[in-house]
Amino acid sequence: MSTANEARATAKVVPLRSLENGNLRRFEVTCSSCNLRELCLPKGLAEEDMARMERIVYARRRIRRGEALFNAGDEFHSVYAVRSGFFKTTILNEDGREQVTGFNMPGELIGMDGIGTGSYHGNAVALEDCEVCVLPFSLVEELGREIPTLQRHLHCVLSREIVRDHGVMMLLGSMRAEERLAVFLLNLSRRFMRRGYSQSDFHLRMTREEIGSYLGLKLETVSRLFSKFQEDGLIEVQQKHVRIRNIDGLEQVLGSKH
Amino acid sequence: MSTANEARATAKVVPLRSLENGNLRRFEVTCSSCNLRELCLPKGLAEEDMARMERIVYARRRIRRGEALFNAGDEFHSVYAVRSGFFKTTILNEDGREQVTGFNMPGELIGMDGIGTGSYHGNAVALEDCEVCVLPFSLVEELGREIPTLQRHLHCVLSREIVRDHGVMMLLGSMRAEERLAVFLLNLSRRFMRRGYSQSDFHLRMTREEIGSYLGLKLETVSRLFSKFQEDGLIEVQQKHVRIRNIDGLEQVLGSKH
DNA sequence: CGTTGCGTTGAATAAGGTCAAATAGAGTGG
DNA sequence: CCACTCTATTTGACCTTATTCAACGCAACG
Image (cartoon, rainbow over all chains, first blue to last red):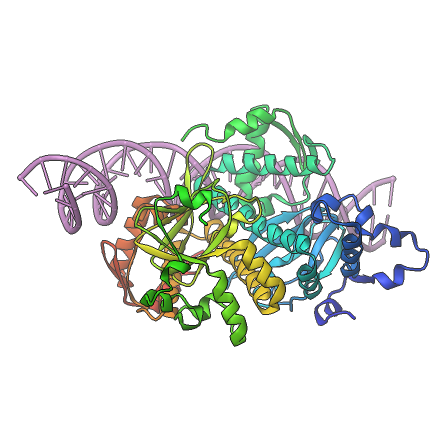
């Protein structure tokens, strides 16, 4: 049963049911064999609980580049685990200004801003073709009541999101432009590494403007800083491709001066 | 049984048990008669569930002005509901810079940043003499498993904290100094009103520096803006006392220009 | 009644924003 | 495959905003 929200969206909904007839993708969908398992799920989950967990991942959904997974105001039913691709989450205030609140990569959960009010508070837009696991939140809560490990895990995820947000406040509230970009690059690097990608060589999925919005800077400032970091031998940039040449140097940008 | 964390703190722990011999404060501690009930608890909680809820509020704790309710790194056991007084929460980064992440007034929960890692991520410091209800988190989770309404409420509180943080990102990332202070004052006003205090006449518990840290501004800038708002007839300020004279005018500061 | 912390105000400065122009790439349709 | 269009990016010149540095006033407190 697809929700009003999901029916409205243009992205394709793939219910598990339809994948059950010997389709290879049926196997992919099991959490136990998913290579993002350690990111999405608590460790030490009993085998039977894992099986129950898999039952609440009731569908996967593909979102094409530029499309929204959800928009502010859409009715909240599910949180989503990014399986592949890259998202940005944004909020829009009354006078039309957009603020990027985060970038999400595989293994990360999005949509938790909708729990409190019953409708999503921000937007989630795919920066490239993406696939997500749909986790109907009422099922998550139900299973949480039965499996304390899972309940605990959910609380940890929510709490860590709060901690992450506080980090962004620190970034926006007390750091200079250079430091903000350095933190941003180091953070991306670490997250890519954790997922088995190169920590020093990656492709930015977002524009300078989106980076700027996230970091509280104008796109021109971001561009200038990229050029400066390149001149200083810290990175190599060519459009969206970034190569970190001196990770220690980037770390030393923090706290230098001031 | 007081935890290592609580034993270290100087603030006094008041276990419920010690209040049970005809002490008036025994009555105060019941959630059902607490005037902050609508803020802390889900509405429509069955009478018996309310009674169970009261059992997890195992203590109240007084914290004097300037003292910490908890500090970054302290072992996490409980979240706290502010009963009276005013807190600031802060984080400190490696090079010693402090960022104020929030101000908390009665009815608000603090300490949720500790769930994810098992130790608090930031500090909570009393800006005036305070009293909090101590909610041991393992009991909260346990009761959440038994009372879905309560579980849901906890998730809402966590989610709303995320939404609040996103609002701060918008503030820090896309607003001019004037707008930030206007948003800050309007937000305080609304929260005071909600608690039955004057929406236009209040006492700031925090210094200009703390406001500045929260808003990503220097204390001098905050001071200048207070003076400017006064000149413009929007507010009257005298030290920590603020009187809002033109709330619509303050709202129009948002989005004007830019 | 001096000390101390907090707040206000002014003048100079620096950081980042704005505006504008040039360039580079990616995507599109012929 | 090429020309064309559109968007993203880079860079320069100039400007605005908020910061820095410094001096001073005020209020609370021992």
